[in-house]
Image (cartoon, rainbow, N blue to C red):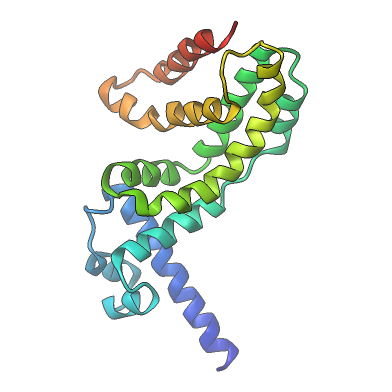
Length: 196
């Protein structure tokens, strides 16, 4: 096999994933067909099935590729590490998770559609990728929970709740159009519950 055909195959696969990600994020898993993805990616539908035998496999590949692009920003992690109290640590955690996930609005939509349209077969994929984020951030919150400054039995649960608040931003904006303060208000309400 020559390097050129390997490169062509890689670019075809990349074009399929990029196109599928955009369409799945816009219309959801059930809202787009592999035929539509093939047409938009300018490939034959058979080519998609050669790379991904089932539509669900394609969706999992798209989600995996998007999740692999999630990276925690160092300066926000440093601010969390240097927090002076539980309240500041909680606010830094929310900012860190919010900034991290909102850098990829397409990922937030894909996660939302995953929760609504797909079942537990994607859970291992989500646990593997988001689990790393949860583990890292939870380690920074654990001391505040142990000191009694944050009312929560488990730091991971706290991080997962903050992720859920961030993921609810889109649906909240549709229910309450033009009111961007909803996510911050939801966080503030949850913070009051968590703080002792």
